[in-house]
Image (cartoon, rainbow, N blue to C red; front, side, top):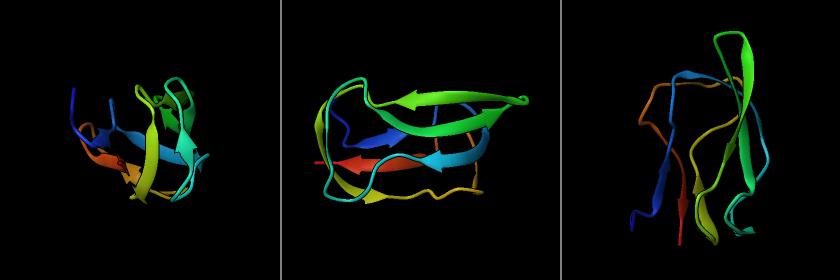
Length: 72
């Protein structure tokens, strides 16, 4: 959709974050690794843009729908 926020698709714990503020990212780029149900999932960005804010860091617990990053 046209939203600038990228939200978490499922609950879990952030293992690593692959992007930083001001990074230019394209669709399909890995944003972070999320551990859920004892499995690690690569969370990818669905559209291109420039990262304006990162709301997560390794070790954070997130719920489904929580904002992960903001794109411009």
